[in-house]
Length: 166
Ligand SMILES: [Cu+2]
Image 1 (cartoon, protein in one colour):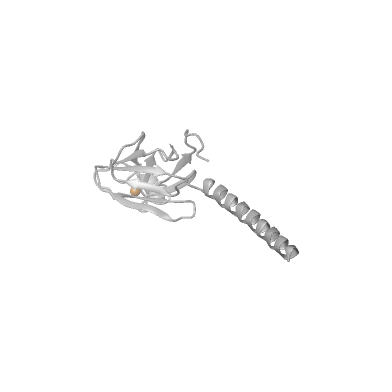
Image 2 (cartoon, helix red, strand yellow):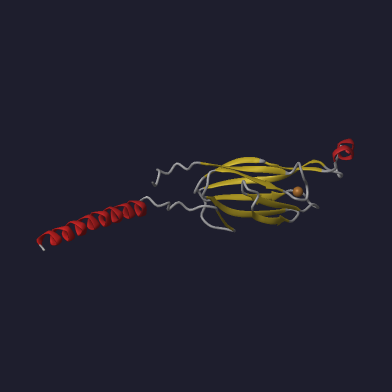
């Protein structure tokens, strides 16, 4: 009788110890869970900590030539700058100036796996602003789909200055 009682107490003790360990492990997992936001937040306006102005340049166009270049390559346009860096998690205003009086451009932003994050048009002689916050480091390609392959670029997202949150 006494023997059986002891055995039950011992097994309850072992169960309690295992449960305590599981509880502690769960707590640790909860404390270390990934609270970092992913993806890109894109707004038309808002507070920004940095600003980049991107111009559209006519490199070789039918109005101004050189005629031989246009004949050989077709009309060539470019973004300027075509590569620029932003800081991760820092809201950055990106302003596109379409300098052409009679040409529309567009802007298609993708992630590394070619998922389209934004697609929009820039009418002739217009300024278009976005406040973009990239939550992941990496290289984000962008294109004007009307003037490929020359009118392309990349946004490079670098680590922020903020202390590690983990
Ligand atoms: Cu274009």
